[in-house]
Amino acid sequence: MDSSTSKGQFAGLVELAEVDSTNKELLRRLDSDTPEFFAVTADKQTAGLGRLGRNWVTEAGKSLAVSVLLRPTSRSQIDWITIMAGLALSSALEKHGLIVSLKWPNDLLVDGKKLSGILAEMVDLNTVVLGIGINIKPQEHSPDTATSLQELGLKMEKDELLEVIATELKSYWSRLTADSETAIAQLQAELLTRCGTLGTKVRAELPGGKNIYGVAVAIDETGRLIVETPEPVALAAADVWHLRN
Ligand code: BT5
Image (cartoon, rainbow, N blue to C red; front, side):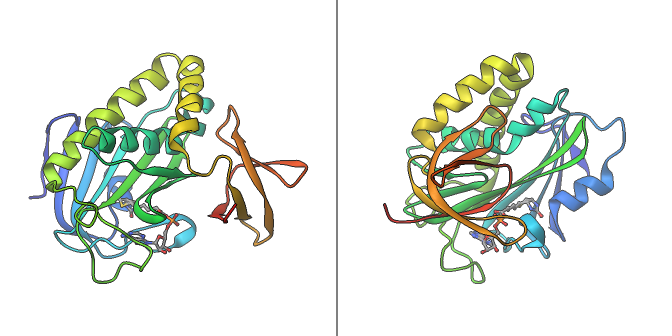
């Protein structure tokens, strides 16, 4: 099916059998009138996107790939979109009995294996495409470091999963847009229990390739990871590896 329907939580949902990337497809369909919570999902992505041009594997019938349009109204909302989405997904999955750990800034892990990845792409200050991938079943071409809901004992079909995460996402996003300062304080508090990066020794690879080592001690009010090296360094973007303490 290729037409947009007003399904569940969405202001319009385009459901595709196959696409290169749902983020790219949403961008192609975007115009100035496209409403918040307009979304694109696909059963299979042929060129699913990770961060920094990396690949995200989405094989037919095995994974949820969805991109949702958000219309932020302030810089602080933009700063928190990725982390907010990770916490919303964690909360949604916990309601179904699965405890996941957030690895700053955009991974959901269980026992160190990656269940879900998030890619938020900013078009302009009022337009962000939030892409979410969640593995439902094992996939032939995903890395050894991947896991899936099925392997973790959670049986959920794609439609149900989509509805469950959309409901939670909407609730978190409403709070962030209604009163950003209060919501950010709540997100920071929630990170203390849901973010496995905090209190952990990490290696952080910065966008230029430089590595820093230290203990991740906090996430500041703009969503940056604070690593003590022992001097505190604030990271806005990096790839983080948790090291043994
Ligand atoms: C991410 O990037 O984790 C962001 C993934 C976002 C995917 C969604 S799906 C819907 C929307 N449309 C898109 O085109 N993208 C978004 P990053 O942190 O850079 O992680 C990428 C790395 O994760 C890869 O280099 C692999 O090592 C690993 N990987 C790839 N596919 C995976 C999978 N299905 N499960 C677990 N790990 C995977």
